[in-house]
Length: 252
Image 1 (tube, rainbow, N blue to C red):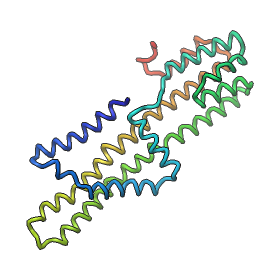
Image 2 (cartoon, helix red, strand yellow):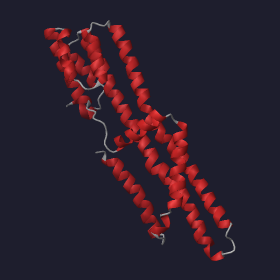
Image 3 (cartoon, one colour):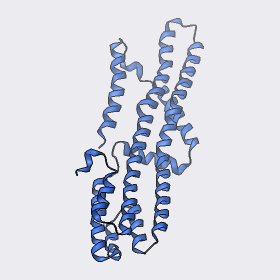
Image 4 (tube, rainbow, N blue to C red):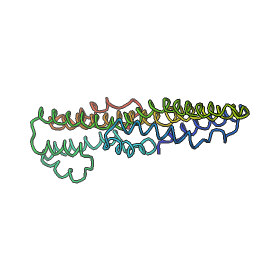
């Protein structure tokens, strides 16, 4: 569970509600279904029009990762690579074929299969670097989706406010309702800013940061398998791969 995402969103929304109350306003004044419909419908309609359907479906699916991050343990990855290196030095590279049945990660599996099949080192590196670049580019799209939504939301909020003001101006004959009508109109602007800055952009940022960490782990795998194929000493490989980790993780 990514507790910072939940706490951050709750804190942001809570601060707005508490601020409204401290200013003497009512929470009910912020609850405007029409404004929510305009902002949410307009924002995600514009975002949907900007991306292909597969990207949209992937983004919706990946949004859960902002709250439940994908499994990523670079320390354990290094340990596995060192174990494979020791086994390869004792029994030869072909012995690693037994390990392929235990691997669920497609990137690692492809790398090991290339090594077992006797692929030339440069061909191995070129193939895996292409695979890594494709993986990184593919994973960017979900963050870009929510980033785009965060860009559209404030503008759609302004559109909602303008629509509300048009309604107010058409009822100028009843002066007693002008203040309330204008206040309701500007709720759409608040919805747009909240959707952008407390929901969409934080999710996009979280996904981008997770993608960086996942790519770093894939890079560790690529380099580790390359060193393994070259027959380097396991201890030397470990020291090289530890350089990818922050200082606090290296002792593990």
